[in-house]
Length: 271
Image (cartoon, rainbow, N blue to C red; front, side, top):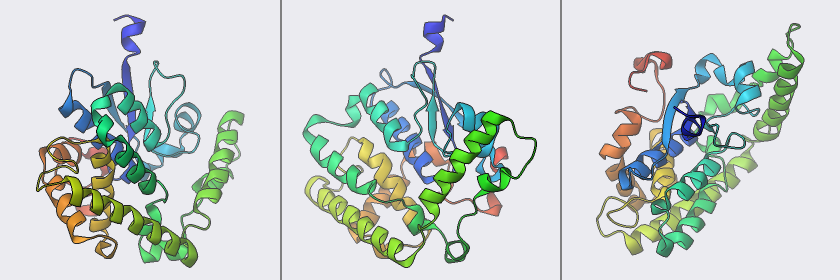
């Protein structure tokens, strides 16, 4: 295979219980179902957050210095894509079928609302919120035998952690996120009311990139029993999508949350 041929392959760095990883992978599945000829060739690579592989020297220095998933790498990319929305925009450039022109404005508006908040504030348990998310990068920086490059990326990750998570679970922050989540749900409900006539996807019989992100988020909110944020119409839509072959191709029958009965993530087969 030539180098040019190799560069057309992509790797999605992925954890199967990361909400934003699920959004991204679902988008890939929907795009492939819409048009297998334009679908990019993407292999899935586990980044086991339970074993802190996202904080490894290789991951922080070569993939994502923020230590998050998902991320997309390839020789065809100038640099890794390290945000789920950026990956989805890249995918939609490859597969414009995911953003039909006559639905583009609505899709963009609802996606903007979905990404106006971080869902972790809504999906983290009360006990975890009480203690906060530990800054493991700062703890790893206590080691004496770190290489200079690795130490620098851990410092970047530590700063990012403080900026992102330090105030996430304050009462004011959670109230703000809940309000934004309700705005997203209400606009999605309105779109379903206008365009969905008892069919599977938001706009009828063909999925869009919005289905990938919205359904995954709603699934997570339902898994953590935050139905108080959801309308009945939105829940019914999500239940239909979660029963689909496309969703099963992503989750293989698993919920969006890990639990001990599933065993070690590294042993999941298929991933």
